[in-house]
Image 1 (cartoon, rainbow, N blue to C red):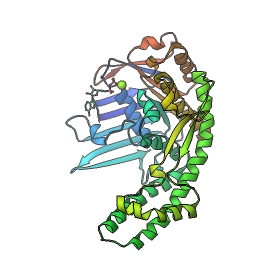
Image 2 (image 1 turned 90 degrees about the vertical axis):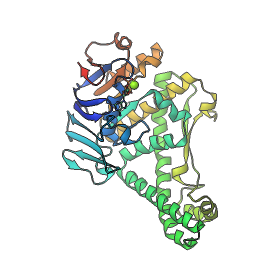
Image 3 (image 1 turned 60 degrees about the horizontal axis):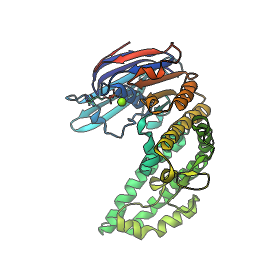
Image 4 (image 1 turned 90 degrees about the horizontal axis):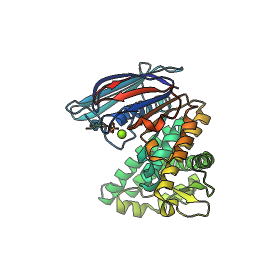
Length: 365
Ligand SMILES: Nc1ncnc2c1ncn2[C@@H]1O[C@H](COP(=O)(O)OP(=O)(O)O)[C@@H](O)[C@H]1O
Ligand SMILES: [Mg+2]
């Protein structure tokens, strides 16, 4: 896959922007805070409908505006045009996504059709941050490779919201404990499906992850991700039994305390130590990169596509050897878009890169 043209309207600090990218490596340079990451953010929204930055859509509207729009043309079939628009309509945020002019009715009509993998300095929070970030990271990959998982996960989230409402009603004596039966049943079906899929997925992911670690860091003591569930079994009937048993606790708290929405993944060393408790900052940074490279390799293999690789200011943080290994790897990719303050970092590489200079609100080639 490769992007031919990107168009932004009222997106962050851009009123109107059109950039023509090329196959291969594209490098966007410019001083701090001029809008380099904003460009990658728009591409990640066109890929995932949501930003990789943990923010609300209204923060993306150019200040003083109440909508944004981004679109892009792809250079290879089967799809050619992706669009995402978002507007504040009487205080409500409305978002629309279209592929080749056809609006998506559900997320799976859009999600996973244009693949990107983004590496950012914030990726270390996949290792050091809260469980939610790890769940989101893994869910986003599984959803791209498996539409059924995406639909079931979307349904599961709605069931949890409804079940939580009933739990609070029971606590406030506005509903009866029996009202939970129907929700528990639906919960058990989906929780069991999600758990089985995540555990199965992780086996494949771990082998890509170990490959990437070996390649990037030359580690001899390898790492693996382990799934930590808040439920004791993935079996559907066992899940139903367990959630029924935990009802009094859930009613008391007013929300569903166990299930895939509360689970976590932990990164362990081969001898079982929790990596984040014993690793240096440098090791954590390298492992975060390996997680993303594993995502890239897995998507390439499972989807038989070449995701567009986005590197947000990460090369400057790496030592010479690691940077070289990453550059060796990306030079073989169909399209890579790199942002960097200092293009000296890549000057010793081939000269065929397309270069862009960000100058605050506009971009020149
Ligand atoms: N909603 C917005 N409207 C206008 N400008 C914004 C908005 N959000 C962020 N900015 C501006 O974007 C710039 C940061 O862009 P960013 O892409 O993160 O910079 P960098 O080039 O360092 O990656 C800042 O100058 C910030 O003020
Ligand atoms: Mg930036």
